[in-house]
Image (cartoon, rainbow, N blue to C red; front, side, top):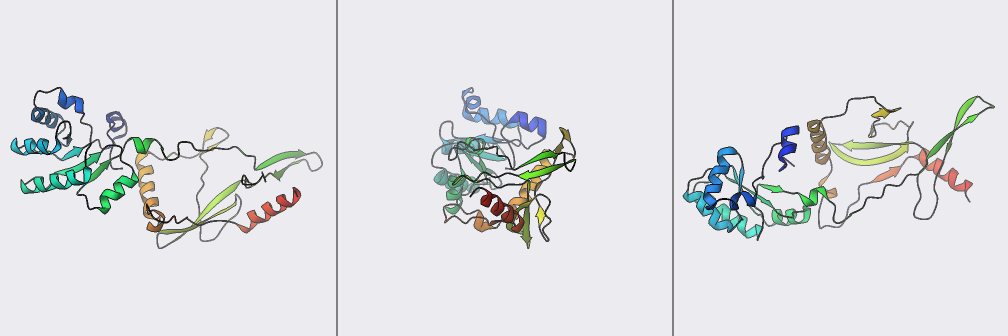
Length: 271
């Protein structure tokens, strides 16, 4: 995402703000074009919302009144045909630099479909589908014990005992772990789930510790550092793992030999 429609988030975090014009603002004026003019006075880089009444007529009013704006936002209707017709109208009248944004219950499937059909849309405003998960409304978070330390009077030290849940289809892997990622030509190749103390050559450890004994032990990244990291991660994930409406291609994840050995030993204990 390149921006937000949440003005408070924009104010607090410096995120670019767009798409914030409301239907209620337009409806508070007797004339739609007057609402556009007043809005642009306050938000010169704002996107004008054009579907309160009729999207095509709204664009014609903008052109007739010579209202210059950074972009237009369509929030309903046939987004494919509307965007095509509006783009032609804008280009014909010299509004070539005016961008088209679409919103309205968009998700990855609708956006992909619009892109595949060559809709002349410059940006997508996603709200509900980004902040909720309709297709997977719950995320299981299960607490399992992977190891326990017990004091030994005989050796006057703490001994670590690995623990593992072995019930059918609900196995949990033992031991504190680390995830190692292999990369080639700036693309992710595979991950290996290993023991925490393992060191795997030519692979990057992914898990970092930020809190120890209740104290922050290293600086947390700010919003823009998180965004930059996220963009690099997405760019490093091969396209075959990001395709929509295709046969699912799973990213390869393996267990290290040492972890497999511990698992085998614990399984034999429960036989």
